[in-house]
Every structure is written in C-alpha cells, then in structure tokens.
Length: 163
Image (cartoon, rainbow, N blue to C red; front, side, top):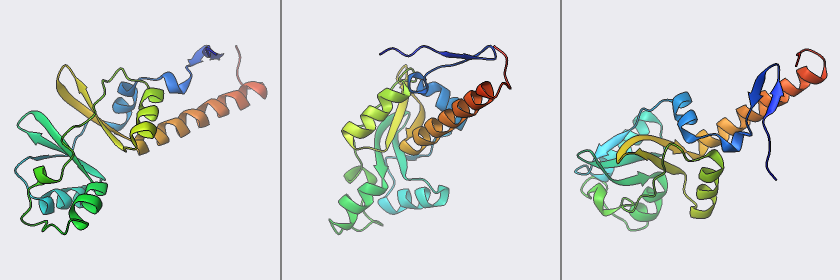
C-alpha cells in the first residue's frame, strides 16, 4: 500500500520511513570519529571511550579500511585473549564494511540493521566517506517524526490548524 503525504496547515508530512539518510545526517551532523589503520586496539578503544561512541571507522589515508565496534572488542579481543596494547586494529576490525549512499531511506537502513545484525553504517558518496548512521540515530529520528506527526494530528483534530 502506497502512503500519500498528509496535508496539515499547508505542510506535508512524508511517511517517515521514506526519508533519505542525508536528512538524518543533516540533523545530527557529519562529524566522524576515525582512527588510522596503524593504531592498536587500545588506542582505538581509548578514542571510543573518550567520545562515548560505540564504533570508530578505520582509515587507510582517505580510504575506509574497516570499522571497529564494541562488539569486536568482546568477540575478537577478549575472547581471543589478545593484548590490546600490542595488537594492531587491522587484526580485529571488520574489513568488509557494508556502506550506504546518502539517498538510502530510513526503511532501507532499518532493514539492513535487522538483516545484517549490525548497528553502524558508513555513508559514502562518490567514493568519499560523508557520515556514519547508527541504529540509535535512526531510532531517535523515527520516534521524533512519529511524535511530531501525532502532535500535528492532535492539533488538527482539535481545530487548532486550518487546511
């Protein structure tokens, strides 16, 4: 079933799941936390802790080499009993990184998160890294979009908005 935009007070609310990821990036910002591929696990974890984030992108110059996440710490470092101070990040990062374009929709990203059981997706445009979307970013955006739509509908029903 195709959903049409809702017209309230000459403002159109698009079905939130069809919104492009570029809109989310514009709202949250394009700042990225990256580490060079030459760092150790300990240095990458320090960066994650310092910025209170769940992943860092691993860069080889300007090229995305991989992603390192909290889950990698648990499954690839702790369980393998590796020394974080001496083990290079390249030994434990996920090198085959699934990326998305900024035109991907919220629904497409949610489907990827569910199917691939991942929590972070780098956004690449024209071969250049332009952002990172997390499952938390998408969840917050969907909740806010639904909250705003519900409030607009409440106002419309109560007669507070003209059409």
